[in-house]
Image 1 (cartoon, rainbow, N blue to C red):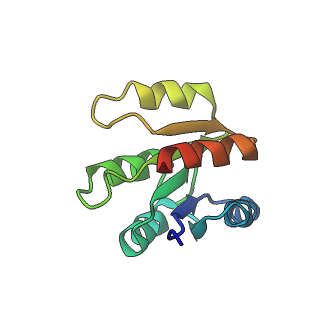
Image 2 (image 1 turned 45 degrees about the horizontal axis):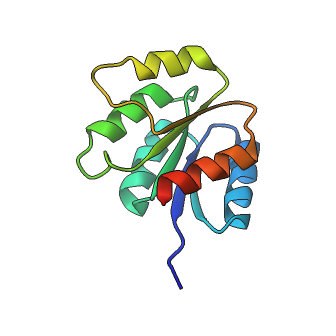
Length: 126
């Protein structure tokens, strides 16, 4: 049997973390969670996830900073990242046009479409 892919879910909204962890688990993934960018970096180094979903607006360390840190870390830079944000298309444009860091592997505005999200995750992990 193939090993389950692990997704690190990063969001400061506990209810959304719980929902997304349950949803991804129901769809055959293992999950770990983090409530902010600092925790996200710690969990990414410890857990070595196959994919990361990353909120942009969080306390302690923003998603933009966390994304940049992930992409600058030799051990983590190849992990696909799906940006999930309530900020919308303005954030997508901002991230897509940054020369210092690669474009995100996926982007989704809140409220999320859970079926679209799991399909995006599966496509990135195939």
